[in-house]
Image (cartoon, rainbow, N blue to C red; front, side, top):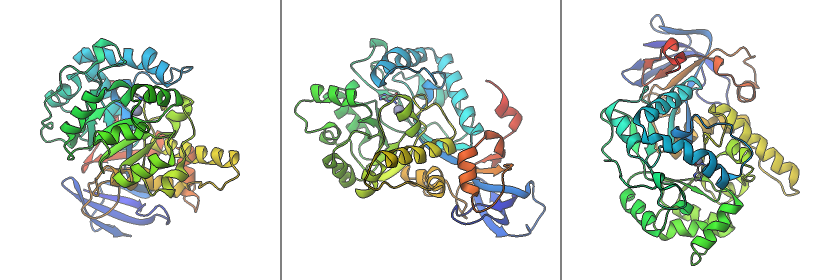
Length: 403
Ligand code: GUN
Ligand code: ZN
């Protein structure tokens, strides 16, 4: 299949007229100007770009967005644990999975790292009936064994064989150290064995950090708890990471773990202002996540906009100089930056040999030097005319279905 349009190969440069030829699930060829054959999709006014990647969200929380007025620990007890308890019912889990996949794809998210619940129903569901779209994913059953309703403590761990013919990779997801005793954290490290991604939450709220120092009085700090168990690896995704000391940043950098910034969630739960400068100064790899449902918005350009706004707010509050990411930096992060963080070097970019996970945009905004800023700040899902996943065109009518 050939798609024609302006190719957004490098967000720092104006998109140039050209075409993409796909073979199987990959990009076979990119060319400029006139395509060699009649294109099946696109036209001169379209912009072709890679799909977005979300480095942190919770599929079972898809119906729990917007329950405001609580801090992290209250919100988990009152909103999230009741929502996740519904996954004891396989049909409920299936509907949540389909809903979350449809909403992601509608918003242009064509790859993600995420959480299921502590039940084996999530993995079982995905093994028994394939997800509606074949998105690349690191996805894991939650591990937790305390400070939660009995119905949510991990009892049965699902078989970790990957769903046949799918781009899902199982990850190990100890929820956070508040909900995991030492045995559970040790088991998580053992299951990960250094091979698969580990996803967890770190230092999101001050109350959570205070609880950690009571639960783990012998550890020097929150990050040290995970490190003692070998949970800080080059494949560890540490969501939030707001309330960290320099010593903790240094430790994360030494272990080459990845910090996942979740700006919309941090504002929603009033958890704090992420210190992007600490991440940069320590050379820590960064990814960006919607964190549905603490984050209210699944569209990654809007999460990117929140990243810029949070940095600007920190800048206005501090006398020291603060790095304000540009729209281009943010665009790079939600495409190939997140792909690199998730170890998918052949995703999130327009290049020969990469997966053909593409968006064909037709935004009603000028295609000028401010294009990327205009896209980030005014993003609407209706800007997307077509979505291509692994070389397959997705039917818009099918996407519009509720379930
Ligand atoms: N910390 C532990 N669990 C969660 C969760 O589900 N969402 C967020 N935002 N933080 C958490
Ligand atoms: Zn989360």
